[in-house]
Every structure is written in C-alpha cells, then in structure tokens.
Image (cartoon, rainbow, N blue to C red; front, side, top):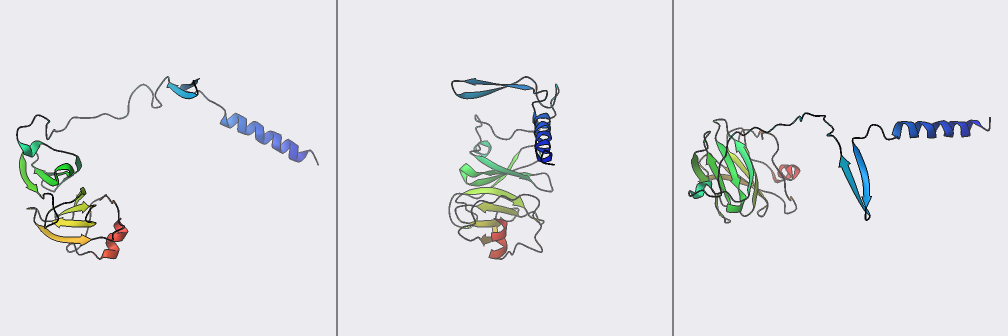
Amino acid sequence: MRNIPFKFTGVLIILVVFFCGKKDATYTIEMKDGVKYVHNQAPLWGDTTKVELEYVQKIGDLEAEDENYLLFEPSDIIKDTQGNLYILDAGNYRIQKYDTDGKFLATFGRRGQGPAEFEYPYSIKLDNENNLLVGDFASNSIMVLDQDGREIDRIRLSSNAGFFYFRKQVKLLPRIFMTQQLCQSLA
C-alpha cells in the first residue's frame, strides 16, 4: 500500500512528459548571445493563407491638391444608411463626409471648445437616427451632431471616464438624452 502514491506519481510524470512533449514543431529555437531566436519553417495554417485583402476604395492622397482629401491622423470611419463615409480626421479636428464614390461632400467641426468644435476627437458612431456621436477625450464628452454637422446635444462624462470607443450600432431611443451615470458605464 505504501508504493501506491509513488506509482501514481510516476504514472503522472510519464503522462505529463508524453502529453506536454514537443510534437511536430514547425519551428526551431536558437540562442545567440543570450537572445532567443524562433525560426518558423511553415505557417500554422499550412501552405495557403486564410486572409486575403481586397482593394475597395482610396480616399485621400499625400499629393492631393484639394485639402478635403488631405487627412492627418484619420482615426475612425463609419458608413451611414445611404452609403456615405464619415472619416474622423483627428489630426485636423474635423469629420470629412464623402459619398459612395469617394467624392467630398462636407466638413464637420474644427478645433475649439464651442459648438461642433473638437479638442481631442477619437471615435465616431451613428445612432439609430443617423446622428453622429463623437467621443472627445479632452472635453470628456460625447457630442451629437445632425447630418449637417450641427451640434444638437453634448453629453458630459465624469472627469475619469477616459478613452472609450463606440463598438456596435448605438441604439438610443427616441433621441440622445443620456444620464451621466449611463455615460460613465460606456467608458
């Protein structure tokens, strides 16, 4: 009876070595001057890639002569129900609106602290009425703009709200009237 714990421990060690041992590794590890180098011989997904990129559309260019196509730090993009694209051009403190063909339609916002002005915009989303929701880190607020870029509401967040990003479609009924407590839960 005294040998049972030793036998059990021995079997357990054998199982761990067997199941945790190196199996058909597609890489080798090399140590040079105290640095570990991992060399991959084959990708994990086999010989064919599972991700393919498809060129869809280009808006903006480094050599563009029209300033409406010069984007500086574009940080977010959304599409409305008509197919128009809204690009948050954070470095220029504005939102650029383009049609489905990439033709410039409008600019919303500018740098500042007044209505429809941004201090540090970083995320945009459309609500269920196609109003733009703009997260502004510096002012700790969510600005609500209509489809013409006019500010119709501003929701102040607590000073410790920090960064938040709009994820899925925002559904707020009937209009955007959120309490500060709800906005804090978004952060």
